Length: 102
Image (tube, rainbow, N blue to C red; front, side, top):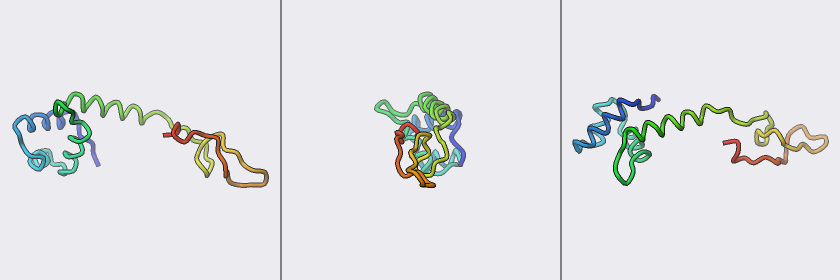
């Protein structure tokens, strides 16, 4: 699935100004109606859809997801500080903060 690009977001903005339907916009951009719906839900605000703000948010999400995640290979949770009880081959208890790994 390809993501919307800056030109497509600008086109959505223009079509919305012309009061076109989501189905019409999807047809013109050759994407599914649900793609347009998600885009408007995710990036529409009290003042309407802003294509610049939508692109900035997309760029920030991409940058955030490029950062490496904290993993160690333990089966229980993937954290580096899992505690293995003596004689155990798998971690059963963990001191990690799972939220920090997301």
